[in-house]
Image (cartoon, rainbow, N blue to C red; front, side, top):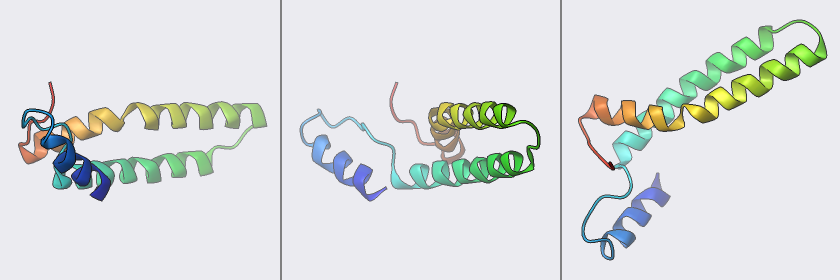
Length: 87
């Protein structure tokens, strides 16, 4: 969050005053949403019994799903907080 804040202030001088990075509170809420999903994925993964190939497929699927929801989690955090950043 500190990195995004420093990039936001540094690039803000160059980029015509538009916001390129989300504010810290939206990032914090995004991390909270993703942490919840991470714990749910961990529980599903730990409970998965079966053959090794089935478990590998489950882990890959959960990893891809987790990676795919990073942007929607940020959009949800911005909607919850009432912050609009980006297009």
